[in-house]
Length: 124
Image (tube, rainbow, N blue to C red):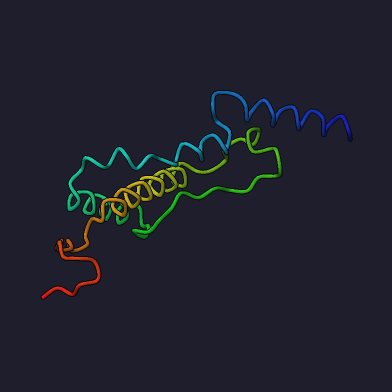
């Protein structure tokens, strides 16, 4: 019985380490930088985000998600998610990155008028 467990653990370790197919490695790929969207005009970025969310059946507030494998075994756990689930998780990461760019640039919010009055004085 112990020999079977040793073989099973060894196979899982090898399966998780080969070719970047571990669960944690693939989930890390879903997290994207929002800086890549900073050059996209706000209205176009919001439209792209909404289209991606609709195509993926996700809310526009989607965030990248992570499973919780046993402590310390994440890099060795093979990715057993279906292609559809991997695609949905990737879209969640893209939507989250777009949302961070939108929020950072205050897209979709009315512009404030700058007033150059004295501190504490009320505008006329």
